[in-house]
Image 1 (spheres, rainbow, N blue to C red):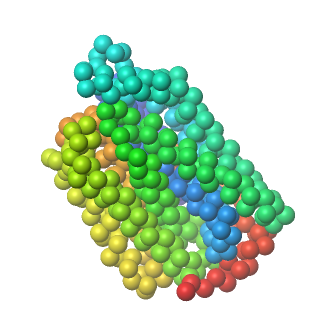
Image 2: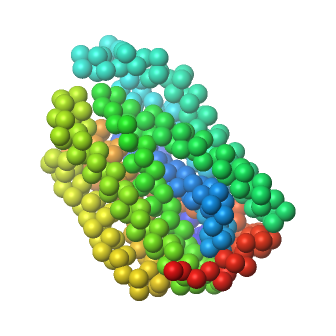
Image 3: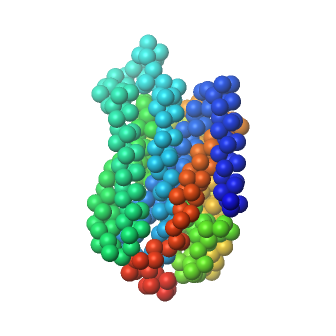
Length: 377
């Protein structure tokens, strides 16, 4: 049993035990902590799925060397679909619109009643099943086609091209359903893009860490040129995430409409505002200046640890999105750690177990030779 496998087993068991205790002692805190951890893990897996689909659609040869590791990340999606069941069981705890109307205040009633055809438990559950089933089917189909080698390279590209709009549509509405409807009185048209930007950037970061970092999954054939390419993608999505976050804030601040400012005001004042500044620093300013250098991007070990940094930053971001609906001030809780240990550990464990019998690269892919000799501009 490898060290990573042992650690993931230990994290999963410890997290599960602590979560069970947490649901007994403080079920509301446990549920919100669990949602933050789950959406973090799911958005990273979805980011990796987008990466694979884009790699096939654009026929990018340099990505072939790293593609199997991205497929390993998406192999956790079936488990993550199962791990969504506690969220469905806790709808009334998480989502105000799922509670009896008698408990709503006037503002909530005015916001929710016009949306009752959309914000209701049966339709919510049906949409969630559709989103998760779509992601699992696409991920498994692309994974199995990849395992068959070069004979289906054209089919991979076709499936990926068809999948991209499906993934974009479902991830956008999943962001609306699972995160934005935590406060049904607020809405943002770019919220799905915000989740995509953070998840995709974290997926690139995780892929960089497991491909170039100290783990046993490191790819020896990966060169400084692949590291340079991944470093450029990391830098691009650090900028993209900040651009979307700032645009969302700026538009709401300029309009100054009372129905729109509540969500932002809660998260940008007091201790949540202090955390927001910290997230901006660790998610944008520090990695932005660190990744500007061509020399840094050509050092695989440095890119690996920058990737791990951005994965952690994405979790902080998801925590900042979810937990203010529970606490008016930032209160780190041991259940936050328990939830990330369980969901993250279980996801890593599933990925490792499914990847154990497969080579580290898609050996039958006709583009592999070109990928191995890729030279960054």
